[in-house]
Length: 329
Image (cartoon, rainbow, N blue to C red; front, side, top):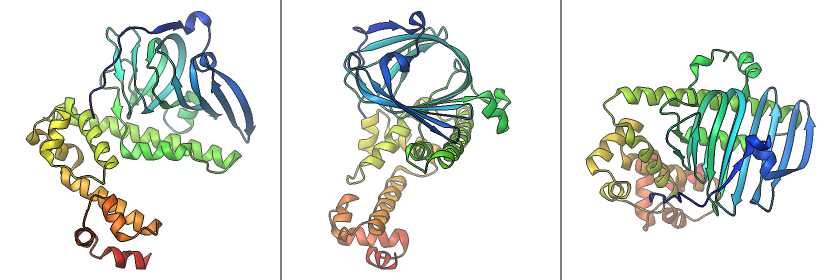
């Protein structure tokens, strides 16, 4: 959770508007295209002069979903000016970039595990990408026909690209949906229906997240802590084999222990320790159900050096021992 150091110079600038070319078509070449039952799939390979990686795009019912997965070999700064006229969603799963759009006076960092959703008519501005880092982004453009079909034609419900507090952390719920969106769920009509359902689901979740953020803005909680709290939440989830004192976590993210405790509870309706324990127990339960790993190995995976202590904690949480739970599943 260390603060990233960003380079401020040595960017190769490319004007896509002048070249009348889209970002995707400029950095990559199409390698495959196929369609069935109203779903068109296109696959692209990033050109060697830019780096390596690929882009997959799904198009259906006035919706396009692009999955970007690439690494650039040098710093690039792209300028673009294009019409969008639709709802635009972005989920930055890996990597980070800097954007400056629609006459913003200052550049805005767009970091890993962040997202935004806005109704966009046109976009002009610059997008900076950093070299030698994996960049993975899921971009969704939803046209007006799709919005009207699903009763979302009142675009005043959505934020605009220039509004404050546009960028949100990617919540666990949203991450689960966009991960599911990338998985194979049949072909043709089945896949098209699945993708359409996931687009509606993620729009609903983001609307809820913006509403919750607005409520938190009006509460005494300080908004500057929100991003740190979401990053801490993901950090704990990624390090279940460890154990941390709250005071050490507070130092790590630059907050006092008391503020961390109060803001975490206010934001997530549980304490830091309660959340960490819940994640450990859910992980252990999944391993007991889906693997043959011995209980002593599972206890180490979730941060217990002693299997007896793990079994006691599991029983307190689920009212049965790990052994008995495994016998039932």
